[in-house]
Length: 61
Image (cartoon, rainbow, N blue to C red):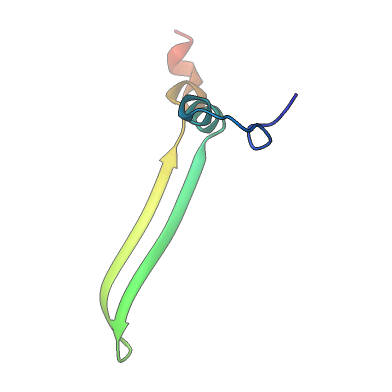
């Protein structure tokens, strides 16, 4: 069975299905400063996953 990265023609739907099935966590931060004075701070925390994978007890009812 080929993985998604080895296939030549991968559709956006296949990528989205794979990401939602496994889940993705992205965390990062950007700080813009001048002369060691922080002017702008941007923090990002993103969790992308399918609800039935994260909270299976809701879907079992």
